[in-house]
Image (tube, rainbow, N blue to C red):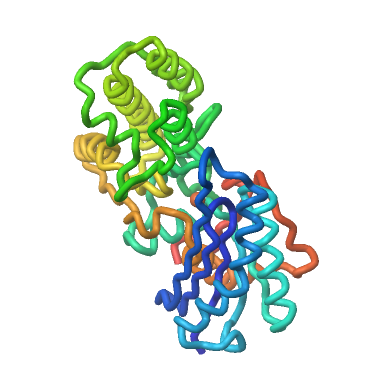
Length: 333
Ligand code: FE2
C-alpha cells in the first residue's frame, strides 16, 4: 500500500497543508499572513492561522481527492519558529492524529527545507546553503546528521534584507513580482560605497552592515548606491563562506534553499563560484523555496518510513530546534 502523509507547516507567516503519496505531491494548500505594516506579529499570525487552519486542512484533503481516513500519518513542523505560530499547527496536527488514531510525525522545519529541495532538484549529497527570513546556515550531511559548517552570528540574511528596506521606506511589501525590494533598488545603483564586510571564520554577521547602511542613507548617500553596496557585500559574504565549506567538506553539489534562494543576483554569484570549482549548483524553485506544507509532508513521509513518530501528548513545539539536533536515518535511501 502506498504511504500518504499530510504535513502541517506553521512556523512563521505561512499556514501550509501539503499531502504526498510516496514521491507524488497530491495537495499543496497555503495561506500566508501579511502584516499591514512592520514585521510579523507572532500573535496576530497565530490568530489568523487559528481562523483558517481547519478549512485549510479540509481544502487540502479535497484537492487531493482523499478522505482523512486514507492518510497513513500526520506530520507537523514542531520547530524552529515562532512559538504562538508553531503551537497552532501543532494543535491541529495533534488533534487530527489523535482523532483519526494515526501516527503523528515530528518534523524539523530546516530539515524539511533541505529534503524538499533534494526532492525537486534531484541532488543527492549537497553542501546546503539555507537562507531565509529566520535562518542563515551552511550545512552538509556527515555521520547521520546535517552538520552546520557556518551560520550568521546575529541576524539572518532575509531578516536583514527585510529590516533594511523597511527602515528606508521601501517596504512592505518586501517582495514584488518575485523580486526583493533590496535587489530592485540595487539595480539602480552605480557606485559601491564603503560598508563593513564581516566574515569570521566560517560565519557571517550582518548587524554591523545594517547599522552602517542605515546611517549612510540618513547621511544622504543615494539610496540606490547603498542598496547596491549592501547587496554586493551581503551576497558575497554568503558565497565566500559557502566556498570555504565546499573546500572543507569536499561536496560536489551545492543546494540553495529557503525564501532568499530566489534572488537572481545571488544566483549569479553562486554560478561563478561553483562554475570555477566544477561543482553542480541547484537552487530550489521559488514555489518550494518558501515555506509550504509539502516540505513537511515529504520529510514526514521519510521520517515515518524510518520509524520516527511521536505521541500527541508529547509533541512539544521547540522554538530553537537546531538542524544538527536531528538524526537523518533516511539519508541516501
Ligand atoms: Fe522556512
